[in-house]
Image (cartoon, rainbow, N blue to C red; front, side):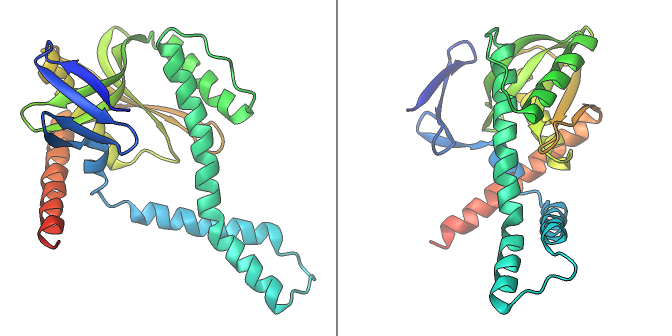
Length: 247
């Protein structure tokens, strides 16, 4: 089902297809922030994470003194090679549940606290941070669109942190990566362009995939990060042109 959003005082209608994750304005598809930042290569950290997942599996399943035949060795290696996908799917479930609960709570709903302890850890850590830093949410899960640069996205949260206007992005990941900075900068620019209000701070809240580990980072160097996003946007669009020309 296509979602419709009225922006810029009703002058712009942004359409969003959640199944295909496509934004359109008028008859034109506009670039999504998440798609744009995928141009940034982070294969290095992901590759080593996948390798470590395989090694950990082998450590737990290779026992000293136990003999394995050719079939068992093959099965063991195949399962080790799949561990990064298994862990990713499990982590995605934890992340989805944690993010979903926080999103509903920020909207004033009263969701039932999940039973899973790792999900609970993330939720409780966020609640503690929000209280200590006097978080006052004003906007949650808001679609934004930049008329000047022609991109759209969904920001997690905007409001005040310790009395200062702030944009907050909640991530479920094993670390904070460069492209996350560019993403939050893009949200900040688009929201400011539409509302005319300046936001003083940008925050990334990281919820650990596997253990509910919590990390809150206030980002500096907004201007540099937004330039980084625009560079990614140019490269993303050029890549699309080349792909279309080859078909």
